[in-house]
Every structure is written in structure tokens, then in C-alpha cells.
Length: 119
Image (cartoon, rainbow, N blue to C red; front, side):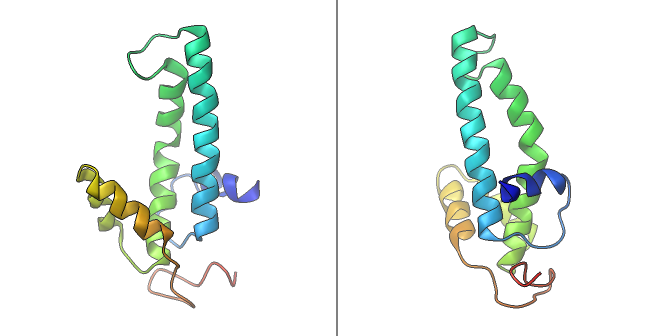
């Protein structure tokens, strides 16, 4: 539970490193909440075309923490934030970003800070 909330505690912190566990638990937690909100949107018939009102508000709320934890995850693998631009390439960019986030971070410190496993 703690790892799911860390990105919210570091809401707009784009420096440092994030472990795979922090990134993936945050991603899983947001997917669970988004699924529940989508079901509520359907049950309450909230306004919106493909995305309901509650789901849309939630996605806006997690935009900054999601970007921040993704940047810190890239930092853990000794990559800079420019790798986020891959996301703009349809399909292949999202797949590449997914694969990059699955990779193990660098052991020990790197140019973005100390190893988060040892802290």
C-alpha cells in the first residue's frame, strides 16, 4: 500500500529515482481505481462520450504524478526524461515505454541519485 501512495507524496518530483515496485504498484492502483470509476460512470450515466466524468477527473488528477513517477523510473535505468517522447509514437512508442519500464534499474548510484533499493 505504501508504494502505491509514494507517487502522490512526491506529486511533482521529477528528480531522483523510482524502483520498479513503486512504478508498477502505482500503475496497478490507478488501473483499479480507474476501472471502479468507469463502472460508476456507466451506472450513473455521467456525461461524456467515451470517458465518463469521474474517470476523466481522475485521469487529470493523476497526470502529474504519473509523469513524475515515469520520469523517476527512467532515471533509475539511467535514462533522461526525453525518453517520454517515445509515447508520442502510436503503438510502438507505448510498447517501447512499457519495455523500458520493465527493465531493471542500474545497480548503485547513477547520475540521477543513489540506488533506491539501498535507501
